[in-house]
Amino acid sequence: QVQLVESGGGLVQPGGSLRLSCAASGGSLSTYPMGWFRRAPEKDREFVASISRTGFSTSYAESVKGRFTISKDNAKNTMYLQMNSLKSDDTAVYYCAATTSSVRSSSAPTYAYWGQGTQVAVSS
Figure 1 (cartoon, one colour):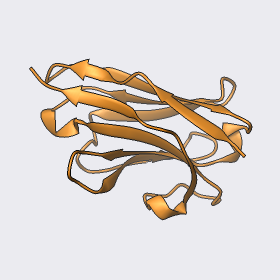
Figure 2 (cartoon, helix red, strand yellow):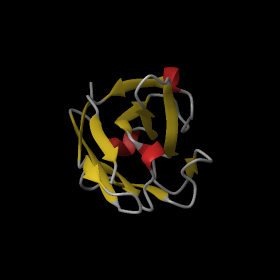
Figure 3 (cartoon, rainbow, N blue to C red):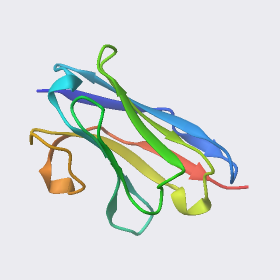
Figure 4 (tube, rainbow, N blue to C red):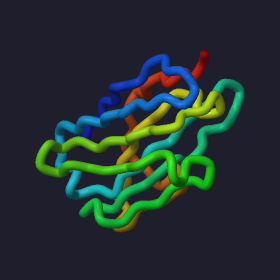
């Protein structure tokens, strides 16, 4: 069973950047399509981005398209989320997840493994 640990969250001003990391143990990320989700205060969890097992195929929520970039380094067993031009609406706890499905997905229930989350706060 794979374990996922996120890092890289913090407080940043609007317009700033952060890079989140998701380190895996107990399994190889090359086996799993992966995703990033977030939960803002008093809101439901929402899809942010997903990436295929090879890393060659990606998908983004409309709200982050053009600002966020998902990537993975299978050799380092780590996935990343580069977040640029951050807005206050991006404030949330960000979670990485791995699915046992053969393809990436924007649907949270398809993901079997989850990290504990990392807090991102965008504020001046």
